[in-house]
Structures are given as structure tokens and as C-alpha cells.
Image (cartoon, helix red, strand yellow):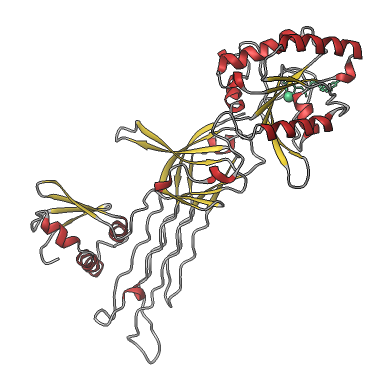
Amino acid sequence: MFCDQTILKLHAGIGGNGCVAFRREKFEPRGGPNGGDGGKGGNILLVVNTALNTLTHLDTYKQFTAEKGEMGKGQNKHGRNGVDLSLEVPLGTLVREIMRDNEGQILEKREIADLSSESKTLLVAKGGRGGYGNAHFATSIRQAPKFAELGEEGESIEVELELKLVADIGIIGIPSSGKSTLISVLSNAKPKIAAYPFTTLIPHLGVVQIDKKVTYVVADIPGLIEGAHKGKGLGIQFLKHVQRCRLLVHLIDPTQEDALENFHIINRELEAFSSDLATKKQIVVINKSDAIDKPAIKELQQVLKKAIGRKKRFQLSSKPISAATTEGISELKILLFQELRKNPQSTSSSHQPSTDNLQPTCPERSRGTTDHLTYRPHLDNPKYFAAEKIKEGLYRVSGERIEQIVNMSNFDNREAMMRVRDVLKKMGIVKELKKIGIQDGDRLEIGKHELDFQSDF
Ligand SMILES: Nc1nc2c(ncn2[C@@H]2O[C@H](COP(=O)(O)OP(=O)(O)OP(=O)(O)O)[C@@H](O)[C@H]2O)c(=O)[nH]1
Ligand SMILES: [Mg+2]
């Protein structure tokens, strides 16, 4: 089954709790704290695998959770980090974050990455930090802390993945014209080939090697028939993928009854689907030259030439090919390469083979290098916080660092609570809250907790 769109819920791993422990040695019965830190929760990564051409393998599951971090141990032993979960996606996968309202209705979809280059990895959900063990909190005043931090929850995100095949060239033509045979001799792709129409049910991508460094990608676009744009056959679901190609190869099957009418049918379908497709350059190539005699081929060439007339976007290849015997294939490889050089930019803006499009599409919310993109929902200055009055008696403080500390604190532990108060004071949050009018006994929301405000904070 071909799936080019899916929605997934991703939960990165929770961090391991920090440990509360004290040194117990023979001659040192009241040794210092030595509880180790918890391990980090596993991240979730989206990793491009160029051998894939569908999202079906992810669509079956819908939910993914990365491994949690292990708890810290005594003797300052760090808990093991959770293993990262790598989800493989095909080249050309668009990633959008989905925001929902309280009723679960989709409010907004925000594009966060376009995985259109090989060796792309997107860190889409970051694992939680491991909690500090009590050894971390020892100070000259607090020599024996009896608390440790809890592990931080991993990020959760709902994403929509949409596959837009990234091929430089799309091979089109009516069923059984030899598209799969052609891609199998041009490139490393090995699609199924057979003498009946609709043998190929999903597009196949293949890399054509010109020399060691120069390659281009071709895609076999199956299922185009009359009425495809109205949903007939398989064609409609693949036409959008053709939009990203820079060039089309239109294969003509001279053994079928009305080769010219078939040529028109395919073009009408493209035009009916989108005006963008109707302007894409087409190299028209007669296939199966081995199956028909030379005069008949010449005659067909004349007919096609006449039909094309002066329309510049069509170019009839002077050399017919035989995908079966490979006659004319090396010349076609070179011709296509030269044509691609003449059309460096895709007519649809989404695919550029340079590294320029490796930058995240939402830069203010993402960090990235050309090799490894990171999507981080909060990129605030960690020390930044905002204090606001929600209504009489209820205030809220938000900010990455303070929320992290509160969420990782064990509210059942008095000492842990005292540390939270210390941090609130040190970060200037208490002062700010007083400025905006907070009173003793008012409720204060921070992260996932609510606490009572006291002026001796
Ligand atoms: N004689 C001859 N037969 C060919 C040639 N190319 C393909 N064929 C045959 O034509 C039939 C259809 O070939 P495919 O490559 O499966 O055609 P397709 O366009 O991918 O067909 P669909 O996937 O069904 O759309 C097969 O039996 C092939 O062996 C050729 O150059 N010469
Ligand atoms: Mg095929």
C-alpha cells in the first residue's frame, strides 16, 4: 500500500530520577551525599532513508515513545541514558507540527522541516533531562540534602508527515509503455515489470549515475490514464509528486493502437491537474524500437512532430530507445543530464537540489546545521521568565528554566520545595510577582504545578 501522508504522536523519553544516597563506610558512618544523576530520556529523530518511497511503515503505528532514562544510583553512579528512537522517512518528507484546541480540533499546522536531502536527520522531540542526584545539592550550609530531582518529561509533539517525492525527472506515459523497464535500465531501481497495465502501484525512485560524483534522481510515475485527475485509476495520488520534478520524460509506446491519442490523453490529464504541470518541460521519447520496424517509427516521429508544432516545452528525442535491449539508453542518460543543467531550478519552488533548502523552514523556532536539524519548540533564553496575573488570586510564571526546575521537583519533599523557593528568589521571580500585586495565599501556576504564595518565599 502507498501512503504519502500520516499523523504521528511522538513522545521522547522521560529522564531518570536523581538518587538520594549517602556514603556508608566503616569508619565514616555519616558520609556525605553520593546519589548519582538520572540518565537522559531518549530523543526521537526522523532520519532520511533514500531507499524508502512510502510512509506506510509509520502509518501502521501512529504513536512512538522513546526509551526513558535510568534512575541514578548510589556512589555517584549516573543512570544509563535512554536510547534515541530513529524513525526512517523517505527523501522529500515534509514535517508539520500540529496544534490542537481543547476539543481536539486542529488549530494550525506549522511546517518545521523539509527533509529533501540525503543524510538528513531531524531531532523532532528531545528526551527529558535526567534529575540531579542529591550529591549535586550539597553546599556548605546544606551538607546532607535528602532530596533529588525527578527526571524531566520528554517532549511530546504531534506531527503530520507528507511525502513529496524528490525526483529531478519524472517518467510518465500510459500503462505498459515501459516506464518501469526504463527506470530499471537507467538507474539502480528495480521495480516490477510485466505485460499488463497497472503493474506498478507506487512510484519508484532511482539514482542515475553519470560518473562518480554526478547523479540525478528519476521517478517512475505509474497509473496515469484518462480521467486520472478526477480520481480514476491510480494517477491522482501521484500527480502531486510530479509537480516537484524539474523535467518529465514522456514515454511513447508505438506498439499500442493510437500512440498519438495516448500522448494527448496524458497531457490533458496533466493540464487538468495543475497549470504548473502543464508548463513543465517534456522530453518525448519513443520506446520499444525493437518491436516495430523503422519506417513505422519514422512515421510516428513525423506525426508527433506535427502534434508538438512550435510548443517549446516539448522536445522530441531524435533517437528512439528500447528499454528492453537498452538501445539508445546511454544517449538518453546524457541528454537528460544536459537538459537538467539547462533547467537548474525546479519550476515548483519546493525542491532545490543544492544544500540551501536544508535550513529549517521555521528558523526562529529551530536550530540547525546542514547535517543535523533540531526542532525545539522552546528556544527562549533559559533564564527568561514572564510573570502574569490571570485573575484575582491567581498568577502564572512561565519560562523554560523555571518550569523545568518546578516540573522536576518532588513536591512531597520539604527540602526540594525549599530549593524551588530559593530559585524563585534568586531568579528575581518573587520580586516581579510582588510588583504585579501578588498577595500571601494567592495561587501560583508554574509548569504543571500550582503552589501557595507566601511572602517569606
Ligand atoms: N519489446 C519491448 N518490450 C518492452 C520494452 N520496454 C518494456 N517492454 C515490455 O512492456 C511491458 C510493460 O513494461 P513495464 O516497464 O512494466 O511498463 P510500465 O509503463 O511500467 O507499466 P505500468 O507499471 O503498468 O504502468 C513489459 O512486458 C515489458 O517487458 C521495449 O523496449 N521493447
Ligand atoms: Mg510500471
